[in-house]
Amino acid sequence: MKFTPPLAKGRLIRRYKRFLAEVELDSGEIITLHCPNTGSMKNCLLPGSDLWYLPATDPKRSTAGSWVITTTPFGTLANINTHYANRLVEEALLEGLIDIGPFTTLKREVRYGTENSRIDFCLTKTDGEEIYIEVKSVTLGFEESDIAAFPDAVTIRGQKHLRELTALAKSGTRAILLYCINLTGAKGVRPADEIDPTYGKLLREAVAAGVEVIAYGTTITPEEIKITHPLPVIL
Image (tube, rainbow, N blue to C red):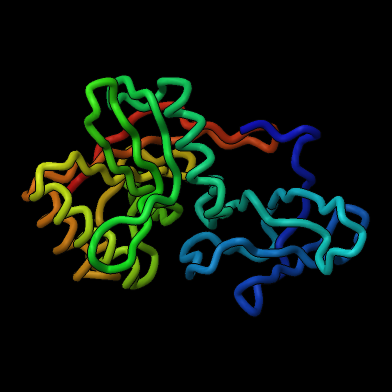
């Protein structure tokens, strides 16, 4: 996913009201950005650090743009725009960068399961087999480890998705949980049992039931964010 022109730069003053961020530009001007991340953003917030944002083009918009990249307290970069994860995965699927085999059709946001869920992607292979893919964006990193973790807060929605994927796998449908690691320097991902032990338990039960759990890392620059390489999932 290329940004043309490249993202603009600023320095974080604070995130507030979950959806807003106060940012200082090199000129000294203070602007307000939309924060497209409703999560805790644990270990992603460092006042005074560099960030990059997509400037608004609509003069009627209430904020100056949308926050995209942050500098973590550990000097790594994180793509905090959770809306981009599916776009990155779709781009990588269509380019063959994610190795799940050939497919003929790709559908987004398909209803499935018994808990009123929507799967991020439903692929159909040439023989008619369907593949269900749920995508999770990972931004939680640590100073003492290069292994990222998910989630960064208790996720009832994520727990529901694991139950739905587990039911799919038990019924014989190919089900995949894909972690899009939107964090530079990460060499793998694990469940954040210390934050949401229920999620970790359900994840291991899903794997035991036949759910495929895979992870892909990204390269992150103000010019482009792109899925580039597979990474291990450590259970």
